[in-house]
Length: 204
Image (cartoon, rainbow, N blue to C red; front, top):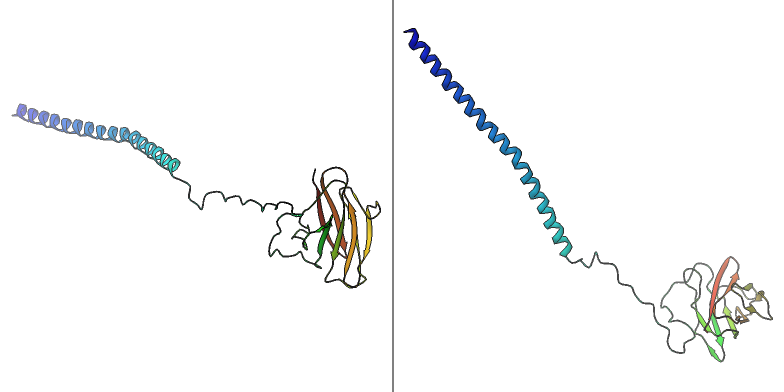
């Protein structure tokens, strides 16, 4: 009888051991499967990123993201004394000033300074003498102004600067002579606290 009990207990131990063994083995396999599955997930994510990058590289840039087109400046007309004049450009703060330049026997249109106080470029020749007419609509008759050269050349009788007294029409006139070298010749016009720059360009 005791022998049968021992056999039954031994059989139960074998069964329990087998259950624990196979359960642990299956769990280990499952855990190993989980670990081995992670590289697959990572690899899949890397592939997805590469595909996204390829799509992005082949996707055309939208009009919003594209760089703005460069707008060419208006070209100077053949024989014109100035560049193409802007339309509707506001004058700088302070007293308005209108300039015109007589080059040989041809006069420029009335010129107004831009927001930084510069007049449109006027084309002349090296060594050429031109007559400049300035009108100060907001100034009083008899008011004083001055002009001075900034890049060589001279005003009036070989002077670097001269005063101007405005006439009854609030106009002052002077002559400017460019240097013999081609390039830019600026003339500063000052009246009160305002300074404007007349730009003359001597073409070779």
